[in-house]
Length: 111
Length: 112
Image (cartoon, rainbow over all chains, first blue to last red; front, side, top):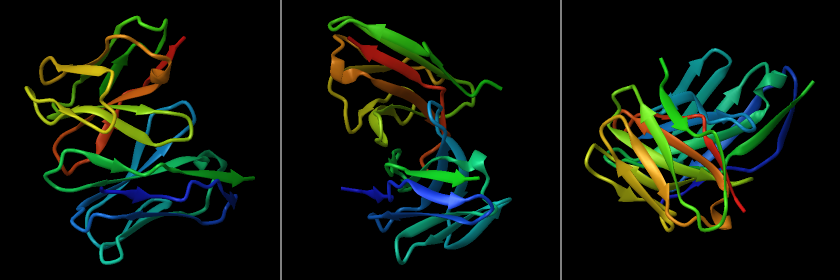
């Protein structure tokens, strides 16, 4: 059974601080990794994708992937109240047409 | 640039009624998906279509049927709705097996 694990939270972070969200996965051959943000009552929207070990930065967001440890994380710098949402981690095994989803981490940015 | 479009956005059904949720994508994606999301839970895959002409069961297929009408459209049918099917339903599409998913705006379904 392929699994993706996330801490459900809520994770409370002061405005302006760095929010760190973590995700572990069970399938060693996983090749594609995604972070989605979901506001309450809305659909998930893609924030970051990462395919190789290391860091990938996009504005205030940095995704980190460590395939040996089966770990992917998302860092949000200079956190804003508008970053308050649930963050979903998704993992794909190439040639498998399904994304495996974590249950999400609820992030609260306190002004 | 519409992306993935779902209809309807809201629906209330009585137990035993049937309905079809419609989904269309204009991104020329090969794969399409139906998920349900219950409060405090992640996305659970109901059915998917890896390519036009194929459909496969996901994690929670019981009580549902799907049709991949063409490359653009993928519908989800509830033949006899049950209160346990009260949920938010999302349609999604992917270009291929290694790329990201794009979601529709969701259908909030209540079965009473």
